[in-house]
Image 1 (cartoon, rainbow, N blue to C red):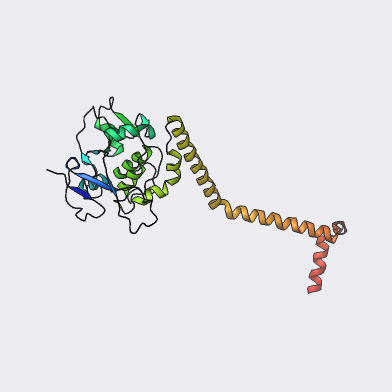
Image 2 (image 1 turned 60 degrees about the vertical axis):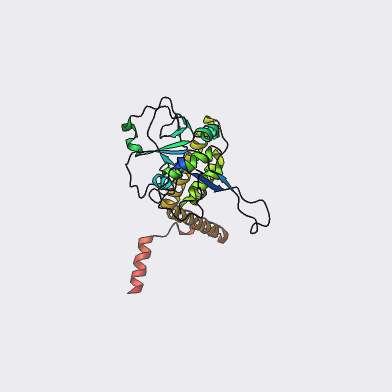
Length: 276
């Protein structure tokens, strides 16, 4: 029986449950090259990368991006087996995901573990023979953990791994299924540009550490500016006033020595008597 093709851009039946193994997913090709884009028919290509998920039922399935991707047929939920041949994303992977993983992703795919990272070690998974990967520093944009580092959803993790592995088009296709998905690349654009096509683990770590240190320094400066900015400004203004007063006194050539012999108490008594 011929496989049914689905174009998710125009497929409105999002509640139907799909099986990724029995269906072909089509995605739009790269932007059109012709100047007459309106009259040019959109071309599509098959999404061939195998995306999988180990689901441990530790989150709300209604909010789980992995479950949504499963409903759309973008991934398959699998059981753990110690000889999995693709890239398995974990919080403490053997390496940082990079362009070096391009062939593994293309041929074997990517798998995420949908569980609380705080309880990850409790799973006791034998990962010795699996190519585990960690993601470098980036910021989440999902509604639950917006702005938090490393707190990525399944969809964000898939997209990041695809992008770093050289599948930018596929990564953006995944995020287009979420209202907030485009912001993931907008907010992390500087980081993605730095990580892109970098294969060296040492260089990736250096990029990550430098970015974090720069952000911490900028945050420190902003904190100092917010907390001490007004005080610092007042001190500088007071110094400027004193400087101007000194310059004025010098310009007028006032000799302060003429007041040195005045008896202040005597002068005060005299002024008091005159007031009476």
